[in-house]
Amino acid sequence: MRAARVASIVLLGLGLAGYSAWLLEFFMQTGVSPTEQPVWDLFYAQPVFQVSTALGGLAFFLTGPTLMRLAPVHWTGRLTSVSVSAFGIVLMVYAGVPETVVTPHLLNAAFALGALSLVLWWPAGWRTWAVGGLAIVLVAWALMVVSMLAGHLEGVFTRVQLAVHAVELVIGGAYVVQTPVPVSGRKLSVADAMLRSNRHRK
Image 1: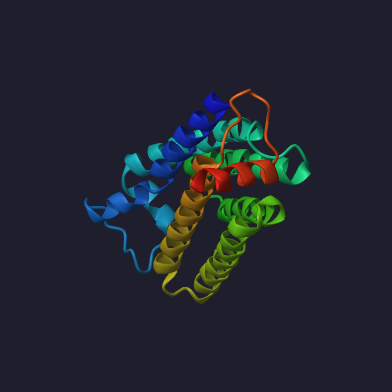
Image 2: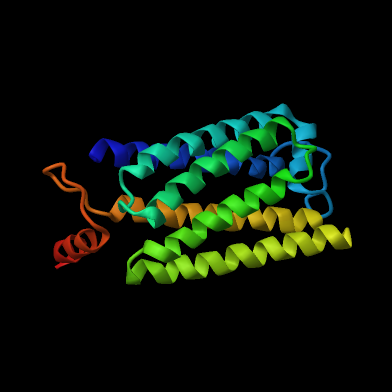
C-alpha cells in the first residue's frame, strides 16, 4: 500500500509535468500565438512539446493501476483509476496524431469523467473540492468549445483549460498524499481513512 501511494504520487507528478510542458512556450521561441492559436499547435513548433506530452500520457496511463490499490473497492473508485489510465492513453494518441479533431474532446470527456467519479466517492470534506473542480472543468470545456466555434481567443481558452486540469490533478494528488495507509497492509475504507486522519490531527 505504501509503495502504491508513493508510485501514484510520483507518476501523477511526472504526468502533470509532461502535461504542463506547454508553459515552456513563454521561455522559448515557438511562433505560436498564445491568444489565437490552440495549445496543440505547439506540437508543430517544437518537438519538445510533443515528446513531453506523450511521456506525460504514459505516466498517467501507469498511474491508473497504482490508484486501483488505493481507491475504494467499488465501481466509483475503480472508475477514477480507469479514467486516469484512459486519459493517459488518449493523451499519448493526441501527442502522436495532433491533427485528429476528435482527440481533444475525448481528452476532455475522460478528464470530466474522472472528475465526476471523485464526487461520487470522496468523503464530505473533500467532496466540496471535487464538486468545485468538476464545475470548473466543465465551464473551461464549454469556453473552449465556444472559442473554437467563434474562431477567436482559442489560444487563451485552450490554455486556461490545461491550467484548470492541472489544478484538479494537484487536488487529486493532495488527496492521495494525505490519505493514511494502514500499517498492517489491510486496505482502509474511505471512512476509516478519514477517521484515522482526524485522529492524527488531534
